[in-house]
Image: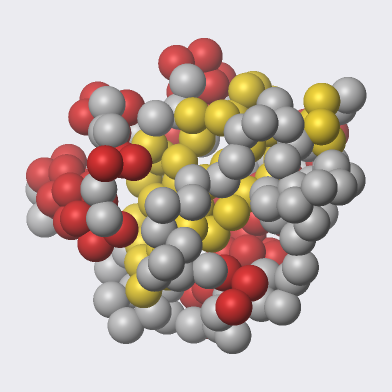
Length: 191
């Protein structure tokens, strides 16, 4: 896992550590010290920790004027033991929403497992983005993770599956990815 870096091809356009509106503004990363791990597996030092013991992320792009952001995740999403959604919601999503973000694209191909608990933070997040004409789309989550989200009835708060699991997102510029996902979302919700 230590070789899996957050997607870097948009860094000439956006760096969350240099963005004064980002929850990660001013954060410094080592290129050589591997200080974070998912259980006993070291992860690349460019991933950002936010309170979870097993889940890390990177804000890959944020467009505050248009109101959307792309976040890439790695690790185990564990609400049962760590209430990871609380950390995501309080420490990442709310600061971004305070800056005008209402539409979230979460890339989850490196999310290894999901363990459910209470759905109240998901419901709260969904209601808050809905009030802003927003949404939360999950891209390329593994099938067993999607199945676990569905089994916990949490999938009702996200747009996931179908075309969203087949997006070769690394080939897009951020705005093009957003347009593709947004068009799919609009078809899905019938707006």
